[in-house]
Image 1 (cartoon, rainbow, N blue to C red):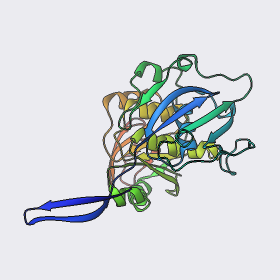
Image 2 (image 1 turned 90 degrees about the horizontal axis):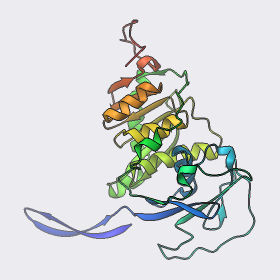
Image 3 (image 1 turned 90 degrees about the vertical axis):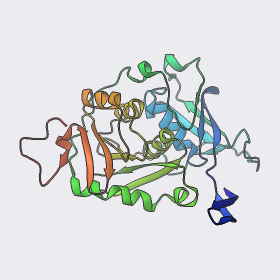
Image 4 (image 1 turned 30 degrees about the horizontal axis):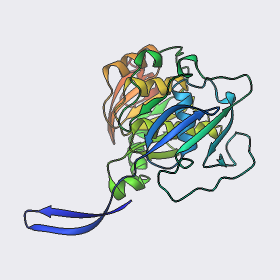
Length: 291
């Protein structure tokens, strides 16, 4: 949002027009019961709530979702979720309850994960969940056989940057993007939280029936254990970060068949696990089974 800034230098100061990234809470409810409050940048609320709920294992399968509502509006027409009747007027208040709430209705007979039925978690913009043990439960190895050329990967950061409008305006914001194996961008999402940006990007694909089993998810934020868990849970074969991965992220990716890349910056990158999915013209034919 616009903000008056006074910029100081050794030669004095001047008033300039600037901008700051908006941060607001978003309550996620399942069948009317709150399960989490996410601190996020407004926009793509339905995608964020869907990606978060499925990526965290709170909802087992997209087919368990009957309806996703934000501000009394149903999800976009292209989303594979049934419509609902009725509207609810939104107010201009930035912290209006309906603006900052997404209601997910589950199909009859479906229910949230037992571990989340009675727990409401505050997810701050810079942090993911702290319950590491819960994230590792019931994770199955990634089976995607997609192969990606190194040359394709080298162009992905620039494609993200070109679509980061909020970053160019105010800075201080993360981005996540989904690409296909040819490097074509599916979606780029921005948010103050790196986890939120990833949830939005994957939620965008989930709600539109776009498969993730042959895609690349790229994030500007650090690749942590729980970020890898989200991707693995949703079947993403290749996860990449402009920054670095953590030791636990590398261990989890290695154990579960996920290709994890770090420091993806133009012509260079680090391959930490399952490098066989990356095709390099200079690669030794004997390489590729491990990192």
